[in-house]
Image (tube, rainbow over all chains, first blue to last red):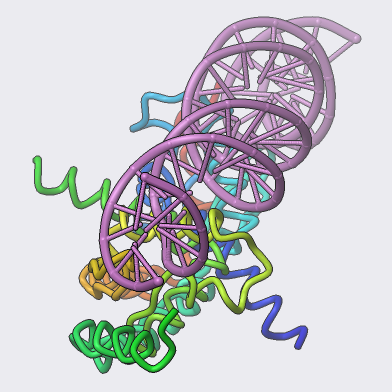
Length: 119
Length: 119
DNA sequence: GACGTACTTTCCGGGTTGGTTAATTTCCTT
DNA sequence: AAGGAAATTAACCAACCCGGAAAGTACGTC
């Protein structure tokens, strides 16, 4: 079941990477086109090292690829992990909407259980 | 800009809640229908307190609602935050696919910048 | 009111995250 | 070779997450 395992790990990393408004803002900026770390850092009230680490998180999650040109290490989006997120989300949503308002039935089941097997 | 701010906060919480395979498994189980904490804990190799805390994370993220019946506190899904995630993801995806393979152009721009303003 | 069941809360230990400043690396320019 | 710009790494700190174990709460039953 190695395939499932790696997929799960990837989703963990991807969701964790997205769970930061700073990082989501970086991604939104990159959606406008590639950028260097200095360019990315410019709108933020954070030091360069902080941004560099955020970029590294995005990179390890596979959401960002990096190039090389002299001292520059430009960043570029990779949409693949986002497609995984989208797939998981849509799959869950489909199932969730189907399980509608069954709380009452579940409580009734708890009750019945107790009457069948009273202590 | 209060609306945007709260939305961002919610996304932080939601993504963070989803960034755990244990919690995603709990949600998958709940998609089959409501369940008590003991029922949720059964397939896991974790103590009840751990599961209880995971459920609380999901609850604070708005992904789970809870009922009350005697000592039982049955859990039920709430799909609303997932729709927010879906919306953000789809919106980003749309933009990302549009920004295709512009790394080369960006590097050329860095080069031109330097030639225009050499130090 | 005592007991059992279903949780929840508190406290603790170890590992990770998010930021800082200062030092280092890498590459271009002169 | 010297200097500077881009970016990373190192060292450090406060804050948080994730487990478990133990104590506490809430409710129903005897």
